[in-house]
Amino acid sequence: MSNCERVYSTLQSDIATPQLRLFDFIGVHFYEYDAFTPNGAPATKGELRDAMNIHTQFFPEKFWYITEYGINDTKQVRQPDKGTRYAKLLHAGEGWPSLPDNVVGAVYYHLAMKGDLHPEYHIYPEGDKTYKVTCEAAEAAVGSIPMFGASSEAAPTAPPGDIPSRLAQMIADLADYERSLLLRRAESRADFSADDAKALQRARKAHVALEKALRLIGD
Image (cartoon, rainbow, N blue to C red; front, side, top):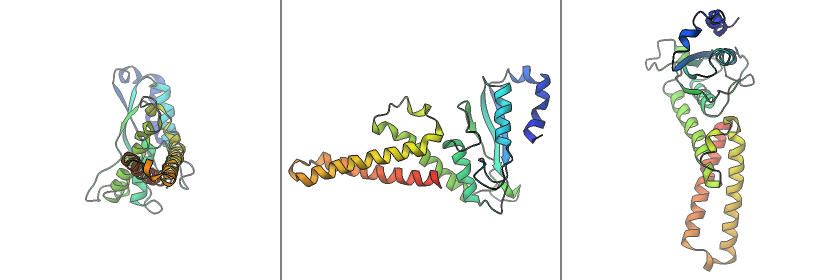
């Protein structure tokens, strides 16, 4: 029996369930040795999987807030890697399983600037920096979707795990758009306006940004 199963085993007898159903949010916490996906590192404890299964069984109608999560290993997983994996879990759907839509927030364990309290979970500052960069890349990818004709209402409901494929498609669409502008400029510079030049510049900047986002999510 995992830690999560031991913690919540009493719920099966409905000892605490009626009281917990009065709450607006249900807390969740889980830890991992190396990664939150089976193929991400040698050891996967499965605490994320167990926590999702248990909370789905008892509190499917509630909002969940992840009050603790973290990676324990310090030999194979460096601080920057932990920050990246934390961000990918929340913002790129890289979990076993992916986090459901009713997860409304999460706090990783923990901020300890001195690094002397539970140092295996100390990721400041390198891990915090990679978390920020990875998070921004994933959110920029989702935010860029309306540029290519998708409705702004549809973007947030798309599965997070699809972000890499959507990024690749947007990059391909941008490349086609750039080629069309370059072809117009080559065929007739007189018809290539200042607005066309600005559009080409914006497309190139977006292309570079999306390529960077794809690399960060794929690392």
